[in-house]
Image 1: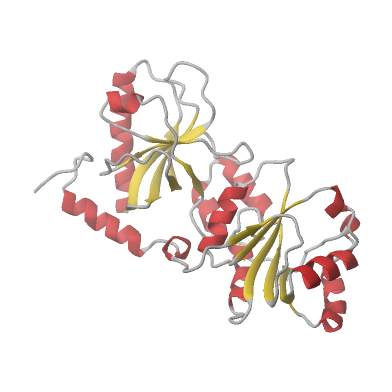
Image 2 (image 1 turned 90 degrees about the vertical axis):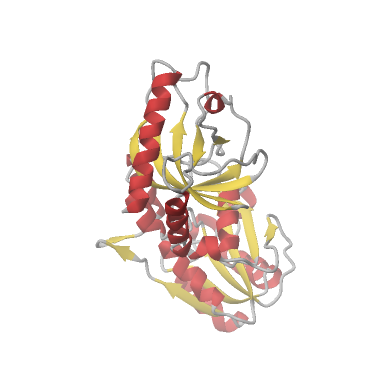
Length: 329
């Protein structure tokens, strides 16, 4: 029986991969015939839409209740209207949010920068000009604590008051709770900063991921027979504590298990920007320039500096075994 570079029989690894593919979150299995439209500034020139509106950092399990509600509007175009803030770290970058929104069935993604014009817009103007005239909203879906307009003057009561005037259906959702506490982006960011990746994944309703282009690294992995792929997340993205994680990787060639180092690679000389370096088990293709999604499942160990490449390779072999054992549980 042939063996792979993981030291496992090929048949065993394929069995694991089939199991993982069976259990993939819907966000990875879904495929859509039409490409999602991405808009920023208006006028948007849309008609007959179901609009889900909010900040949506992480597009977590609470947010997905709102998304589910607009997907029920079969004859309407599904629109996600989100605001882009540039003054803080986010669970996902703008590009990652767009990637996830498309996987969740969104047809039009409005990524509106929260600029001075928008911050000074009266609630009436935002509703009438943007949501009704430009977006053509027939259904508006929001969370119960949604606020909008100048000094956050607009709220759910405001939207209810004008629903009959403008002829739209308003859907309002309470905060989802998990373990007795509301699911929120703030809670997820706190857990992520502490390294509680399993809890983060539960709150998100999908595995926390790093999505982006495979860039060229220093190719040290090749010298120790462990080639890796590198990603440099956007600076706005909030990363978990530096260390090594059991991961699952989505490429155009399929889904694989692997080991991902998040951090600055202290063993390698020079200053390194924080990024993700992933060893993909049983994978030997050149994918420079391609987009991949790396999902993190379990923290294996902290990032540390090794005395040399030989000791680094010994540890990486141990990391591979531990990742394999995690996915075998």
